[in-house]
Length: 611
Image (cartoon, rainbow, N blue to C red; front, side, top):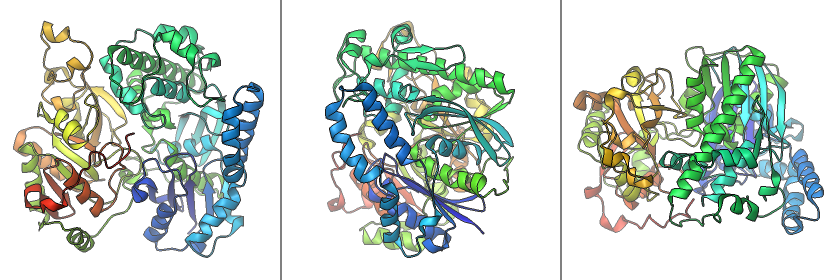
């Protein structure tokens, strides 16, 4: 058996992943252990978890692979500053010491970190793969396709910001790239910054805000900021941006183009910000559709794989699927930098070690993305008791019945079961659940449980066999990466007065039979739940369906704003006690808020830095 460990680190969302003979065994993000959101440090805890899961030592690994090439990044940094000199001297002076200390000598840094984990590190086994090849490998190799076009889009790797490749069997070749500073991911991040959200964190907020606005500025963006060719390739007008050499994403010329300065974090959102969000979302979709249509025409292939941070834009993904140029698409659930760890390991397994590839035509090879740590029942009980929790231990059937009835009664339910998800989405292992039929559930979860912005939508988890009865989708969406509309028969018509409302005034208008998961434009970010990959979660929704006639529940990540998703039973209990979650199921342990010691309640609202 050959074992390959992949590592991503030192930018954001550090992670580790373990692959054996091409099979994905384990993967986890470092933030889940350190409780520091988007942790960029070396993923010591994630590496140790992967080794522990496989019951091996560092010396048992055949290869350790880092997800990008630091010296190429260093080259890009130097060339960029030279190209823009003397602009950016302050930024250059701040960046270079860290780059020399950490990036230029990253092999030595990795060696020190690995030696600290355990004996047996062999420098001859350490490889580096290119950033976008890591993304492409994470998209193609776990997919259910023998062959596919592979499109990766993000901010920037070494030089590439967008790449297109072809995967066939065990082979994967990149044949086209767009290079820094021209980047669709950085363009979207520039608008994330401009609307007052945090870059590399708040892009999904920008996407969620877009349906409240109108794309009034889309033509302005296309006329001034980005020149898009018919095949989707593009160039940015860099005179509007400051990310190459400055300390901000945009500049005064950008502000003048739109007529307002950048919004400060936590400042009131206005219709202007909603229209700006709608505009950049529209432009992103136009560019992505041109890219995918051109790639299909050029290659003649019918399958598409996606990865990179832009692939987390589930609205654009849904439009690619509905566009119909590709018959099937598959998106890596950990499409951002965390997934680069998995892609690095897979690239080494297939392209360096030339291992044969086994394709799972019935789904994919991601195991539902349930690749993180799990806790057995005895350990759960010991940990909860040590934390001061009062709980009942229920058998399987009683647990499902009790939790389904709690949801039916309108309770917010913490759900901590099985192996933790790999990637940014909670998929029914580390989730907060609610009744999708409730007209108040969205505001309750946002304001009293998640402590986050009121406009942000929640996703539905729906039984795969029932998805087409509720949504305009009849394909798998297990990773919450496709958006589709609620079917017409489930919608509620808006009155003329309601249709005349603008922006967030639309928020509390029920628009369907499942208002808690229906966005203002009748869309929803769908997770199809499959009995094969998460039987306990499937059973819960199936029982809720028997009780209510509705196979759809609210699913949001088990955390508050600024907190990583909970990683341990103790994390789950702390979040439960710090919020207005009503009930909690951890393994077979069931907890209700009124049974807990009030002295253990904590102010969770300000426990984490806002993202």
